[in-house]
Length: 213
Figure 1 (cartoon, rainbow, N blue to C red):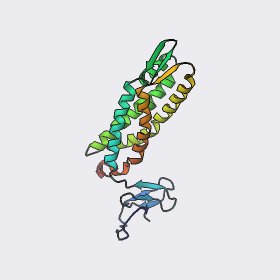
Figure 2 (cartoon, rainbow, N blue to C red):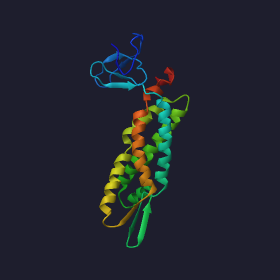
Figure 3 (cartoon, rainbow, N blue to C red):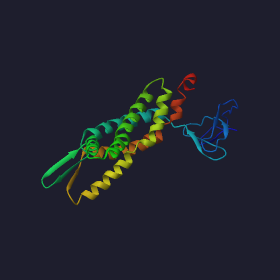
Figure 4 (cartoon, helix red, strand yellow):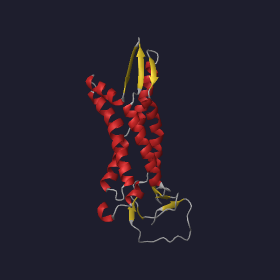
């Protein structure tokens, strides 16, 4: 049994029974691997789960998105998130400064969570992605680490919490959004586009078989 193909395809394309076997990640059905046409999708013939996509120019698009996101991420961490002015006193802080303040105010657990999910994980993920997409011989451990870190990247959650805080403080002080706030806002659709364009299977296929075992 072979995986189903959805998308434009050539009916005369030969199907080989010697293709590698893969297991569906949802129902564990063993099936032969197929090569979808450009823009096509391979799905499980039993449960319909999507196995992989054949995205056109996924590597080039992912690299462009990753580099753009990396630039915005650096800006978001170098400049203040917002400026707060109350009774003539103005305060502005970067994201790392906010983490530092939380740590010294007794909220060590929150500080660690914010640092990991909004600074450390996104920085490592972007750095690894750019390295994997530019090196001619990607390392299997790098790809595995990128896929493992993705659920821990919570820039969207941080942005939502930040907006809620700004709305609640707006009646107590004058708040001026900083460059970092706009950078984080731009990072959210960029990360979403990166997740939809990045094709881990295409990258995995460039790794020699003896290195991927």
